[in-house]
Length: 105
Image (cartoon, rainbow, N blue to C red):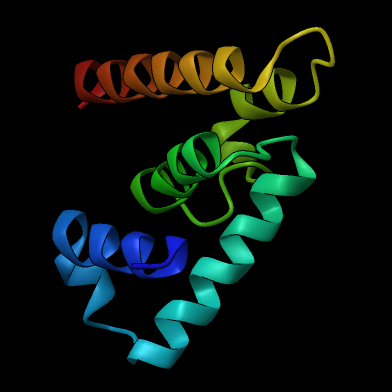
């Protein structure tokens, strides 16, 4: 099974409602675009690329440039952080974002 096939299966299993809105060819195209974005931010292995794709689907497809998630820019643009550190910090920041949002409701 190829990397893209594994990601497609992952998206179907983790985000079925979002995945079913796309045809299989559109889903594959979206995943290819997501991986390209991941590479632009230095996520150059299959493992950390997949983790970044997970965030794109979990948070928002444009979270890296969306002002609602302004915390992401500082993490992604920090050249002193490695890919694994960035993923960890992005996940932590998103968890805090969600917790704050729930407290605000």
